[in-house]
Length: 309
Ligand code: NAP
Image (cartoon, rainbow, N blue to C red; front, side):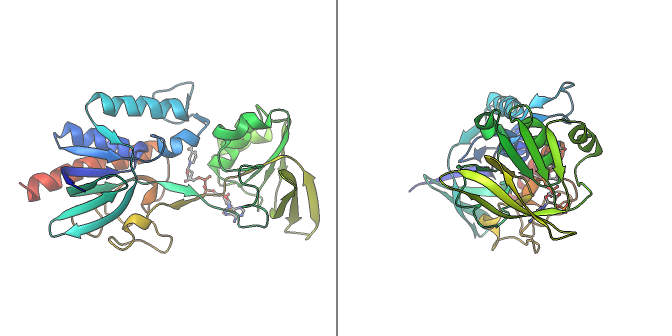
């Protein structure tokens, strides 16, 4: 397997990685972007994005991802459809192995994002793709005129409950406490939506069915009462875990495996930068993932100018 030399390798083509690529390319760096899945990352799971500046009526996540992809490919960035499997430090450079090729880079940007957390209740794993879903954009049309439940109380759960209400006959929104973590504007919309019924202070005990999901067992945390809800779909949106395994022995991470960076997006090891939901930060928004990406692209380019020529 030959080693392809690049100045910067960006791992992960969500909003953070795509923006990092744009900034590094505009700094005249020789780069590639590695992405084994759909370009756009979590954007491609998002039904509608209402808070990305410039789109006054909102924009579908998939459509925004497509605009970003075309923009970076339009300035000559190559997006390679391959998974990075190993990164090792070699003196002042890095060796990145992928399923197809090996690359040597002077700097790397980790923008691998995050994946949905599991509830870890009986039945969840058995019914994935048989009624259990982690992506409303992908699966909502399968539940036209059917009853579904959404689990969670953050932005994603409320946004996707609203989206699902356009297809399903009824949406139960089940949250483990009274207060929502989601933006107030979403809470108002959910409360005013006649198809959505809130079930608060309640946890999911199990997901049951035969070949497909048929019911959900829930328990009220205040009075311990159990209840069975008959339905066909269970959408779980209870937060995200970072995709940081690739570098967890290379750079410092916190107890949640989020990569630690400084303000320039530099990690604990020289020449490695991280951007977006894979790193520890206060707020998680698309516009902030892009901001991280811009900073990482600029910082990695400056690192090369100052250290590698
Ligand atoms: P999140 O904000 O972390 O919310 C997760 C929700 O799931 C919380 O309400 C949490 O309950 C609940 N939860 C966690 N573990 C649970 C469990 N084991 N059982 C039951 N419920 C559980 O996650 P998210 O909604 O996926 O959002 C991720 C990040 O992306 C957030 O920072 C969010 O603001 C951001 N985001 C922003 C937008 C937007 O601005 N349009 C859209 C999507 C996402 P508790 O509240 O009780 O902890």
